[in-house]
Length: 281
Image (tube, rainbow, N blue to C red; front, side, top):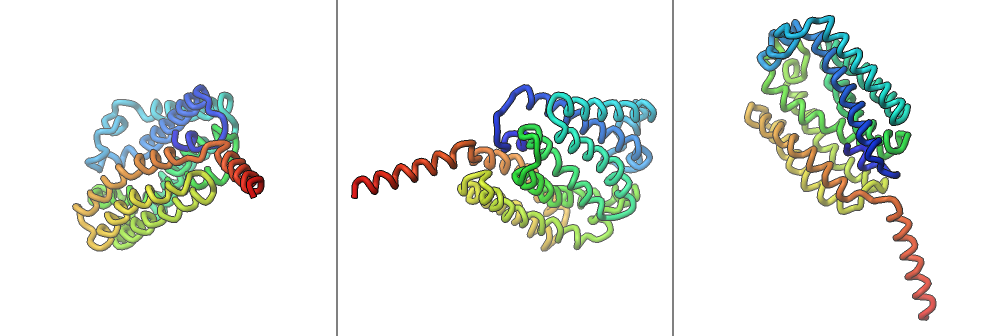
């Protein structure tokens, strides 16, 4: 939604609806296949032991078929009713989630970086759905979502350390708690210059820099406290800060969006002022 809303060009309600439905099918596909793979490990975690596959409410073959069909339908819908670029990004996201991120969770802490790519691509799907390409603005939207994943997930994973350890998942919070906190702070701070890039590229007015700095400051402060003293309390506060941060940040970004023609209108106004000044002199 945010990626589509921030993209330049004509807005089509039909395209937005098809994009939303196609993306939702792709997300369902990735989650279904992920749970099909991880059912034995989900059974060992209190957070996931009530999932459908663990409770045997659905057989493994049915889960795999459902995930595959949902993914194929989602990509086909995006390809035929939106555009091939959006379909390609969505298809790549399914593959990264199921074939890279999911197996990597048990082998390397780099899984968090791979998982953050998965979280970064949906706004790029929305942007591509509107423009048919992945211009600089799409990369900025993706970068914002990519950076946001780290304070959000690293805080969440802190309080889930016993579960992740029991299931054999190699998360930063388990293997290197210090790195976990540093990375959360690092990417929370990175959101500040990313906001400036959005202004510099003409996606938003410079008022967005002011408003976003106020929003970013709260999460940076929570991330700093989590880095200074990692505890269940500071992790919980950072996690809830991230939940408030993202929708508020994107809403403010959309509010300060520079719409098509605004730059041209400003240029024309400047020229008119110049002509008037010459005529009066």
